[in-house]
Image 1 (cartoon, one colour):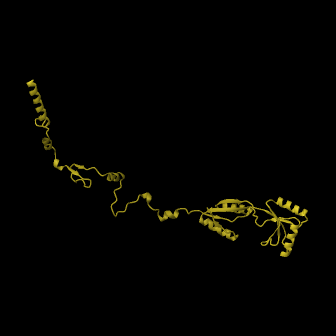
Image 2 (image 1 turned 135 degrees about the vertical axis):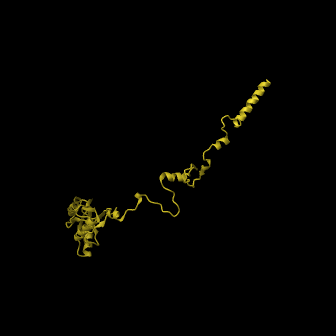
Image 3 (image 1 turned 120 degrees about the vertical axis):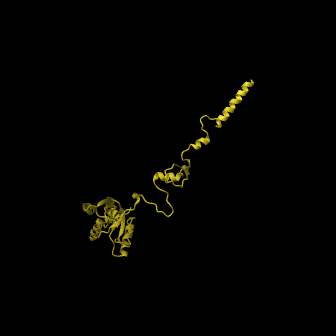
Length: 253
């Protein structure tokens, strides 16, 4: 038993000496490894801001900062104060020659409302000249007026109005201004047929002087032309419109 204890102590002492390099058979201790290094004095550690030596010695550089690595990957060095960053070729401003060759914006002008036949003839001429033409039709707005012609004096017109009231014609009004001044309105109708029926009713009451005419506010069908083209073309269009007393205006959005 005593022999076993002594044996274990000897083994532990041997292992302890071996791991500390005291009795290593391979002569691989730390001082020996340092002595075997070749040109160890030429090895240096560089910082991020230092440059490698011009000599052929080996260098170990410290890890670069993340921003510097990104700049190196894109090929753009960080800008220094006072320096002007260079622009990519695609961002260069267009030269005056390129700007002069750029097409001008088209011009849009609008003719006043024209009679349908006249508008169609003008539209054909404009299209033959290479212009874009848009035609817009304004629907007719016509009403028919039944009336008595204007009297020579206000006293005579008032006498006629009183006679109509006596005959039971309630819808009778005296015009006091405009082209129908001193005339008497006997009704306004959207259709001409309704106006004729009204005249027949008045005739049955002995009133045979009633007439039918389109009301002053009536508007026949009209066509509006919008013309689009380059400025050089529109100059000739303006000149032609002025010769026939047609005033052009800029198209509204």
